[in-house]
Image (tube, rainbow, N blue to C red; front, side, top):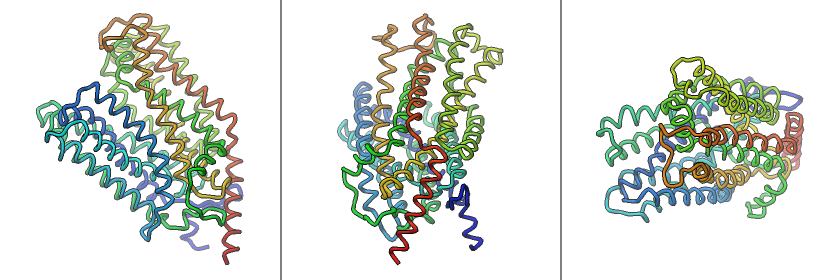
Length: 492
């Protein structure tokens, strides 16, 4: 075997694994420049709708909810496009670049070229839907890449570490650039000039990211990377997607696990829930921003720990272990709040603040380990489907998951709004400084800690029926290798 081959292969547990080079992993992780730049920009969509198109706040809410459902529906449809795109320039780069071009044009028009030009609601909806189509093509394609880069169980979690680093660093950096540097330059208020400038900055960062990702995947973007283990080469049909959902038990378990965690995360991140916790219970609204900023490096450290654990014990076991840890820390956090005066947390460097910061970092660390393991576990599920059906359909697996995940998580805002309504906020929203009543306190505990615990209980139950642990994945990789070898032999 040549030295070059040795550098891209490893043998573990009797299986010859393919490995990506470190620069390929890092350049793939630059997808965070794309996704997080667009995420930072689209967070300003409600301002663009109001300033540029004269749409009221209530109508904006309806539009954004409706387009999120549209976003979910488009995810599995991309699988059909993914299946049929095969060019001499590959599949991945065409879809990544094409999808980005669509979303970039839509966002540039939405925030700059068409905004404040006399157009109304219909134009905004059309541009937003166009953005969703482009974003879906790029995002769904990116989700299939980790399984293609490597099947080495020790290396797959490393992809999650680099992805986590970019996904944390980019939005924090852009928040500083947009709100601290640029906003004062445009009068300190959200106006059309600021939105236009913010759009160009975010899209420029995203463009750099998409170019780097395309360079990173160039070595695997070839026809043989997408072959199955059977001689069947029919195009994808709807019944194939139904078969994946019905026949791939690990995927079903993963959907239950990830979607239940996601809805808890989406609910807790709503501004009214953040206000309940930090503005009313703790009494220091700025503490949330401070913790997010200084939590970057501990989060990356935990991601590295999670990756090492997953490489040694497998993705499924990592999810289970850190889910238990997260649930225990969340339960301890509830007890902690119940036994103290939460207003003491707002006193800088007080013992209560230090204890709270430790608990918060530990809880976020557990979540980060789960997230890192989820990245490699999705790649495992894609390979399991290849072994089960003989067809390599990564976009089907990710598309089916994303469809259900987005529909479920779309209810995060509804749950948050309904929860605060139950404690008396029916005509007004929670505001910093409101009285911390017993009902407010326990609702804050429920939404911030109780709902995640419920999601983790769902995860633990689902994983008992998954059976895709490290030993099972060794057998899956052996089967795939043997089937592909037999296919090549028959072709000769």
